Image (cartoon, rainbow, N blue to C red; front, side, top):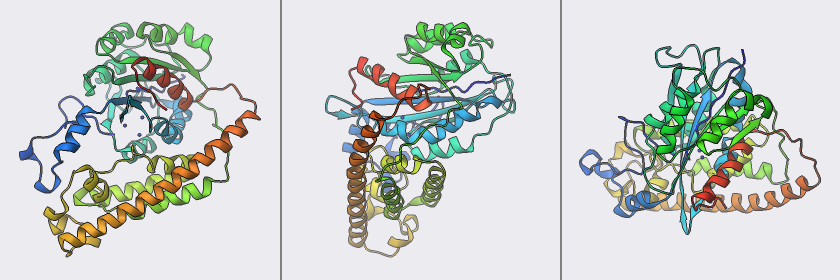
Length: 397
């Protein structure tokens, strides 16, 4: 029995949303009394987080048996999608990217819950998103499109601001009508909240049309897309790839993990570099993401934390500092962090310059190569999100 991979998109931030009843979203300031003094955000940083336009992407992943290929595409193409949103803006304001993950359709999940699990609430932690994608396993089960759309709509903390881009992408290949929750009622609920539902059928357009995928997208005023979930996406190798990937790894040396989360997060960063390196092109696209503004680790890294106003170096306890800063004076701490910030900015600038050269090279190569015509997950997301962003007065480039 063929299965589906469901992808809810409300953005690529590749960072942190919270489900109902859970912790507040990252752009939602906590009461001062609940924050340690050393980690309180400066007012300017809080104001910027509140006013920035948001792109919210919820990925609802069908982890039933036949969806290995689609999940692999999600893992390998995450960084390509993230890079597409690096310049997302409304007017002069850059947008914040948030990604949430669900899995559904796996028999080991709770039957009472519809074989659905929220993996990650809306998050800006791109390494955590990657880690969760690589941890997914598949097995057989029942897939309920209406129910997973409803859960994502009701349980994620969607923006209430008009003009923010809120998208759901659901992908699969079985009839859209299964389960006790009708897709019509689930889509009506999403539409009322300003969320656009797009369907991604894994197979032919004809089959998708006959099994309800096209009808669901039309009802939602979204797009009906078709992809080959088992397609091995071709990577166009460029002369800049190796140097970009190398510089991406060099960036890790500029990160200074603090507090309880610091050591764990640095290990996660290294692990996702390793995961990306296993696929042609992913190490390059990940390095480009790490050189972008969307790769924000202010929750565990002193350089980003100081830049965002999330930490005050002179007030931090010695036990919360990384080994490099233990026992140092406030002035010495600041000088060390400033040096790492400059080193990081220099590496990021080199990556961005190389990426500009790479894009020109790839564009020329594509002119001379015939397209296979087969769709892939990243293209489905990028092309449809670009159109829907424009409708909200937002530009991706």
